[in-house]
Length: 327
Image 1 (cartoon, helix red, strand yellow):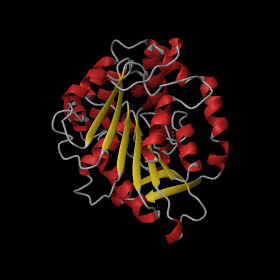
Image 2 (tube, helix red, strand yellow; image 1 turned 90 degrees about the horizontal axis):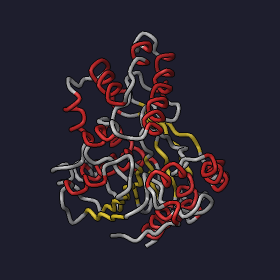
Image 3 (cartoon, one colour; image 1 turned 60 degrees about the vertical axis):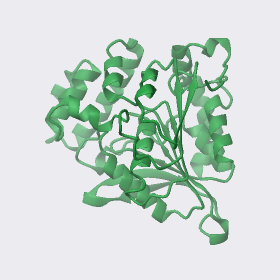
Image 4 (cartoon, one colour; image 1 turned 90 degrees about the vertical axis):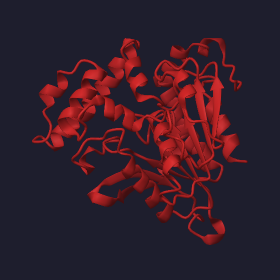
């Protein structure tokens, strides 16, 4: 068990998770990342099959010089988050301050990028994220390359690590925080989840799809979409109507990382799992393929991407990430 002993109030998974997403925490994240965000530049990655993904690059002035190459960290946000999500801004700005170049990638349709691609985002779109990773490596000079992912981004990060060798990707380290592991169990968890979570995710999803409909009205039936009243209903409706999947089962299996999915993992990967995570079933780690490359760190507390020490300072997981990448 990895030691994370928070103040008493945060020894509850719900309290840690909700506080980490609160207005007060957002104010802190925006304040400490203000300079970092001002230095960031927008990048569009043009990929295979006319796919475009967007990201935010923050470099150091000497990073394009051979003698001044910096380590590069690609950061992947969670589902319905974005490159500006508050849980990743403090660690991104701190790493940049310490000398790292940072690329914050937006998944398809996230971060107000619905206009870039007609087809919807779904969690099995690994190929385009692999293509984006290759493009980032080729376009941005770096001494070392790291991937940091949160929640669904942590799931993508580990799947990238499992494909790294076959795609000729050179990755020095992967850090995955509270990743989705068994997607079926994660979706089933939403049926007993507190309403505050399900309503939050469902409303954000519908808002995203509202913009998609506005951009491509002939492709998406917003009235039918708005009739879906649960995450399970919405998932099944969108998959069967707007994607190539014939069943929700095949889709969920497609992005789960349990079983043999990580058998081909070839990158040293640290995975952080909190036992009191109210969003992702923490026991799913037992079904991950054992590997010399996979280092699982359990904590008793932490919630979902929380790990707070307080609302107004560096959280525990960010301290761990900094210590790991500075070695």
